[in-house]
Length: 471
Image 1 (tube, rainbow, N blue to C red):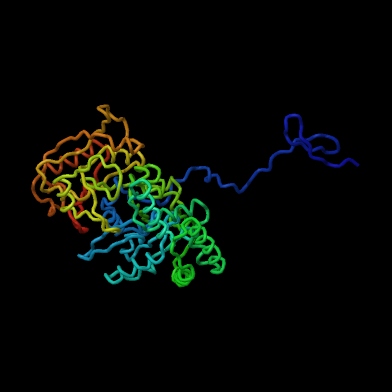
Image 2 (tube, rainbow, N blue to C red):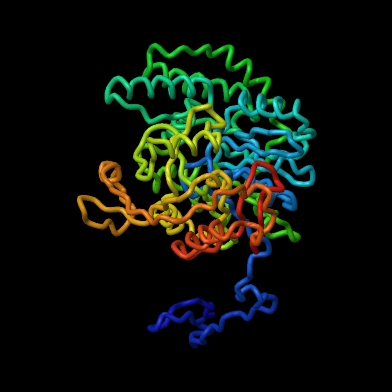
C-alpha cells in the first residue's frame, strides 16, 4: 500500500504524493487574522521633550515646571546629580539635581529612567533638603528604572583624582562637577557597573560584585580611599528604602505610551553642547543630552517623540573649561554675570558670560530638531544700550560653513556680530508679548528669523508668573 509523502516539485512548491499521484498542497486559510494590524497606528501618547540648547544653565527647570503643572508623568532620561535645576514656587526656591522638577506636581508621577546614573546618598539628601522646604509625599510619586546604573562613593573619589591628574599632566582639567558621573558611565561601558536591579535583588550577590568593582578601582588608583564595608552597610539601608520605588522602566514607559491618554514630559539635563557625541569634546558630560538620549535613556521608540522644545538663554554662559567664542572678559561679561546671578546650582562656580551665539544654537537645532524655543532671562539685557548677537564664525578670515568638531579650531574662531539696539527699560513686569518694548520684540524676531524656529515662551524673571507665552 502506497503511503502519503510530502515532497517539493521542481519549482519548490510543496506537493503531496497521494497513492503515487502528486497533488499541490494549498496554504491553509487563516480565518482569525486581524487585517487592521497592517494599518500603521499613530502613537497614542507622545512625549514632550525640554532640552538645553547651549552649555547648560539655560533655565530648563522653569520651562519644565511650567509644563509639568498639567503633566501626568515627568521623566529624567540621562545624567546624574551633576545637573542642577532651580524652581521658584510661591517664593520658595527648590533645587533639583536627580529628582525631576515635576516632583512638585502632586498629581504627576516622576520617573528616573535607565539612562540616569544615581548616587543614592545624593538622591535621599536632595529629597530631605526639599522636604524641609515643603516638598511632601515625593516617595509616593517617584518611580526609578531597575536598569539605571548606580554611582558609588568611590566613583566620586575617582572623579576628583582624574581631574587632579589632568591638571598635573596637561595643565588643564575638564572642569567636571566631581560627582562621579564620568567614572560611573565608564563602569557602565566597561560592563562592570552595578544597576538598581542588582541592589534590590540578592544582597549577597550584589556585595560580591561591589567588592570586585571596588578592587578594580583600587588597582587602578592605589591611593584611593575606600571603606568598602561602611559603604556596603549604607547601601543595604538604601536598598530597603529604594525597593518600593523600583519598577521595570521599559514596561512602565510602554504602558504610559500605549495606554489611556496621558501627558508625558521629558526633562533634559545638561545641554546640547555638553553632549558626549555632539558637544565641545572633551569638555562635555558623559551622556547624550540631545534628543537621542530620550529614546535610549527611557526605552521610548522614536515615533513616540512629539514636540521638542529648546531652551535658549538670551545670552550665553559656560561653566568650567573649554572654548567659548562669544565670551566677554570685560564689563559686559561682568554685568551679565552679576545681573544674571550666574553661579552654578550644583557647584556654586562662577559662570563665564558672553553674547548670544546663534551659530551654536543653530547647530543644536540641527541635532535636536526643535519644534519651538523658550527664550529665558531676557530681563538681564534690560540695561544694555546695544546688544550683540553672534551670527557667523571665521577662521583666518575664511568663513566656517558649520560648527567645528575640533576644539583647537573653535578656540581660534573670530565671531561676526550683528548689533541690535537695546531697550534700556525693565521688562520684568511684562506679562504679554505686546507689553515688551519694541526693541525686545525685534530681538526675539531676529532670533526666530535666523534659526527659522518660533519662540514660544519668553522669560523675564525668576518665578512661574514671569514666563510669557507667545502662542
